[in-house]
Amino acid sequence: MAPLLSADAVASHFREVLSCTDELVTKWSSLGDDTNKIQPFPDLNLLNLEATTLTLFGKKLNCITADGPPHPMLQAMEDSTSEAMKRPTRPKLLNFLVYGSKFRRATKAMRAYAQDVIDYRKANPNPDRHDLLWAMQTAKDPETGKSLTDSQVVDEIISMPIGSSTAPCAVAAGILFLTQNPHVVTRAREEIDAVVGEGELTEEHIPRLQYMAGVVRETLRLSFAAPGFNIEPIPREGDKSPVLLGGGKYEIAHDQAMIIVLAGVNRDPAVFEEPTAFRPERMVGEAFEKLPAGVKKWFGNGKRECIGKHWAWEFLVVVMTELIRKLDFEAAEPGYAMKQDGWFNVRPIDLSVKVKPRAV
Ligand code: HEM
Image (cartoon, rainbow, N blue to C red; front, side, top):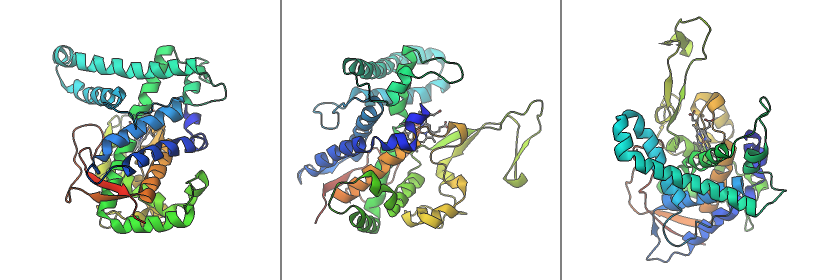
């Protein structure tokens, strides 16, 4: 699966991500003065599901513009991941009797989403489309020669929208930071207007949008959309002596797992002057290169590093560029601060903003 999520593979989906983004931009642009106070997070969640399903599995859900309740996959992801977090610390009987049906219902809805995608592809075969679903269904493990079973394909389809659910959190946090820092919007627009002009955003523009890259990195730093990850020492045969870290400053047991808490790492005052300030310029060019590798771990570390990091990067750059380029956001609740609501990612879920087409 990894080659299908490489930077090159992801670039081939650029136009699909852009077209989904523009559906949302159109939706938000057409709100009247009386309806333009919105919560951006639910719509960004829909955008993420739409773009993930289209690019990785080749099915257009049309869930951004659909009337009625949000796509059931979103609630099912929410219910299953929150349950997965809470279950290990509850008595087993309570999990089974009280929460079992919620978990089973969510699992059933997620598997129905995946099966729907599989059925759609079967009914609409496209032999030229070599995307992630194609790899899941046809590729063989190079070492064992085995393919995924049908049930494993369903599992893997489900893990993608769940993995990518951090991306809309980051964008919603980005909108918050932009409303708090209008000078960043001005500077980003100067760059976008100079590079892209009046025409359509294209893949070739992206490497030239250096300040925008800084906006996205600074958003990832301050949103810590994935709040942390585990690391543990590589096992050493027969050697139980402690592991020394930080040049001997820290001593930990040979088998001690650790959680890296990105809210701390990303706002380390020893590295970042005024660590809670939103300053994209510290994330651009040489300034970014000079930062220690340890403060750039928003996509995790080592073998467990995010498999979707290139997809996420493209999504974040395209979405944030299009939002800044085409829309004006205004804080609807000055003083709003992001909250940790108990899930595994930090989410500005109840953030409200006023949105309208960019003033010319
Ligand atoms: C802002 C966007 C994102 C952030 C900050 C992020 C962050 C992370 C982090 C820190 C991990 C490592 C977790 C660990 O060590 O246990 C991870 C794993 C993962 N991510 Fe992402 N991610 C993002 C977007 C995405 C996207 C767009 C996808 C899919 C298209 C994705 C799919 C996954 C999957 C499947 C894993 C598990 C990989 C494994 O355990 O082998 N993520 N992500």
